[in-house]
Image (cartoon, rainbow, N blue to C red; front, side, top):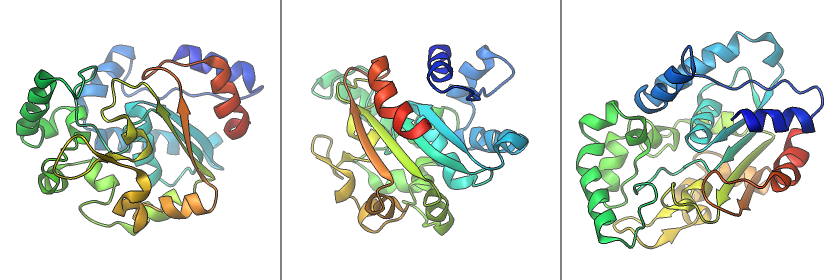
Length: 255
């Protein structure tokens, strides 16, 4: 993400950009992105940010892919220091039900998904980070009961008013979806959409979900107050047009 950091520094004079690293070096950070429980990652990040006096009055947070989901968990659980604008770039906010670059129309890919269902909520749940936001629409009850992370921050197992209260403190919540995303399946998860329960083809959008209609996380309130922004970008998962990024992310939300 060095190129993103440089772009931000060029386009926002005097900005202080900190890239979060989970571990003592790049290798540890990469490993922890797969093997350190995401709940522990959020706790570590919260602790580290709390030590930085320059952030006491708030900061803007931007996460890419899995990082966008982690930062949303951080916003719900770690209100101090406060996040001003939270930007999730292709973050799987409703989880994933698919193997990256494996078309849902493929019979082989469907078999892979069903196999992952058999282990994702068992021993793999506490070992692999990606299993902690695996969301099976074929067995919503099992997902809700066994998910150690996603079902919690989405208030799908237990309603936690403090999560809603903390998200409502945001000035803006920006969710970016990649139109041709082949990594996050379904791509609509990047806007809190997902497969309708019991099958894996028809998709509901954010406003059709009880999470929105009953306002579990405050998303409906944020939207009604003009603070929820659903943006689309061309291309696959982490493909970016620099000018689009400047015009749609930097200028309206980071300056």
